Image (tube, rainbow, N blue to C red; front, side, top):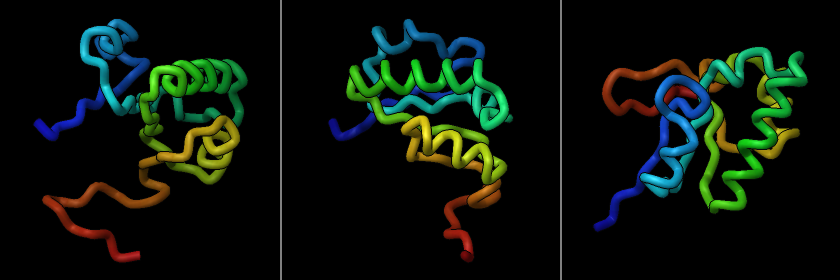
Length: 101
């Protein structure tokens, strides 16, 4: 039918791993609670790396939400997360407006 499914806020609240089996998503968006301060937190790094590996095995693209610092960006890139969103890149826009870079 042409639509794609994304699991939002993975790692927080109801967006658990069971959603992978029920929905078979094509995209998983890691919650910002996992991203915040990841550059200085080995536990977060280990969790994100494990989730990234699982998503790779299941052919699910990973998007890291809430990237606000260069350190977070660099740590995520080092872990293999290359799809990133957050204030570091642009603030949310009203409606569909292309940011002025």
